[in-house]
Length: 573
Image (cartoon, rainbow, N blue to C red; front, side, top):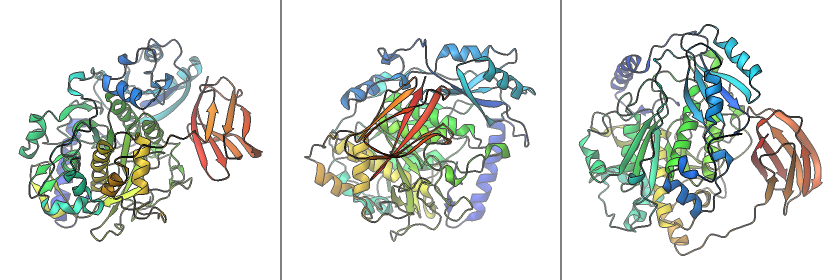
């Protein structure tokens, strides 16, 4: 997770708060033992053969709302959407006599994280497993934990609480007080007055905890109106998002508050679902697996928008986990970034903080702000200038990052003790992200004829730096109201894809077709970003590449044309 947000004054209070929080979390989330060898490994599978699940029965792994969204936008349900094969999971759990459990899953990455408590020979077991099972194609150490054995929680979908998206219009005339600063850059108050405050939209908030949110008086109307649809806690050893940290409380207050004259959120009438995917005590590489799991849950619920005000650089607790550099900010290396990129293809707008690394050694955007087809958000001050701490772009492969920017300096919000922070202001891209996330939900409510990808593209195009993007604010500060006015009665143009890669999955040969552009090069990368097949100077629009020699698994095909670069995820079977 990126470094905690800062207050512009009263540092003693902040320091005391962090100290007390950490002491409390030692009791809640387990003991930290420094210098330990890993006992949690990510196990990646090659396929989903003989799965008990079927794309013909999506109701077994997708909510009614999610299925309806797929139908609405003609998004196919494919093998990628199937849960990880439970037969494979049982096989690896039964492989050793040592007690073990699964603490995370990712169906899009086709992987699980297995935990061996206090097992000295864990590494040997994992190596033997890799050699024993043909369907195990990769292993990676991701954490050391001391935890009780608690089964992975798999609740059913709260179907009755998840309404379908709606473009209902109702009165949204608020007294914003000082919080008008949050949205006036984007003309968001005019979008509200036009009647778009998020009704019928579902926003999933990913964070480290919502201390006090369920008891704070300002949020009582959200529960009375049944706008809080549920919670999930993905951190092992605990199952209550309302204890552990208050970061999510502050972030959600910027989205959902209706405190007249003081704080009005950017999507006050939207529905919300909370998912804890960030460990508030000791961040480890496995947190990226939790993030991947969380966005898949959001998709399965049928979320319209996901807001994540955190991410990852190289501050993991154990040195053997710090395997990334800013050069890996290419959207392909991190499991969190790969999953974030997939989410947009499923009809969800993902808004992620760009990070507060501008003055730090890391300097650049955090993962998964480097993902494809998401909105990564930088921070500006009240003058509209880039905040000094906001992370630098671009992505390491040259894409514009951050995508857009919003106010992340001296924001007003609700703290976990129920107080409204109006004088000792909160700052960080954590504050900027929910501003964009909430207004994105309102804009999509206003323009339901557009897909998630189209909505994000519109938001970028209405940035004030669209024709001259920079490495701090990307395409700039988007004008949501003008975007609505210009497209309220328009129908999005449907275009033929410029590049097609097939078959997918493939057993050996891939066909790459460019309908209009000459293909100059094709590179194939494995899941760790390593080039495994390269073809240059093709000078053609149709090319075949043979990957039969590569091990089964997940790969990324990067196609460079005269004017653009395309990346396609493929599965080799």
